[in-house]
Image 1 (spheres, rainbow, N blue to C red):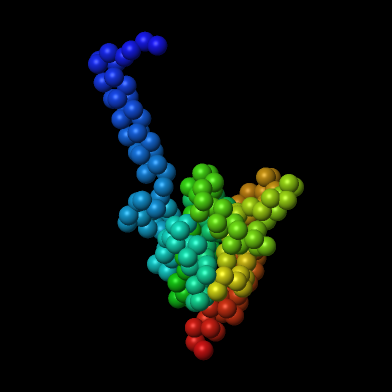
Image 2: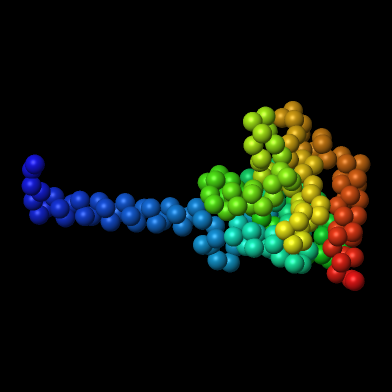
Length: 196
């Protein structure tokens, strides 16, 4: 076996240090929880998010089991269906004065990291199943949860036909029906519990 000279050892050491640096950089770049100060409106600039707090996977997991009632809006900032759904829900909660949480699944789902799998496990039974019977945590969706129990779940546009256009789907009547449904559920599970 050939013995390495001093120059080769230094070159290998530098390469290892550079690779480690790249690994750390990429890990931090794709872990949004390391980004301090990111707000809901960093994702949705044109939507009034005054009643929406942005949370990340680990915080979402903790809040699922909280004894208080929480409303969770699940979105994908890169998806036009999600943008419209978030806009509608934001309008509803602003009118009601109810604070909710927004969880963006883009990073956790694309990485299929531990947060994603823990959320899927906790919400089992309230997820869409595909042809292979896999439970999929989809967006956009809305959950009302207390003590780890899902009280209400909506995923009206999580699975739509590819031929559907967002504006064609969300007619004035569809928006009004959605608004009535979500408002009624928030009144039933959130506002009545808060006022009791």
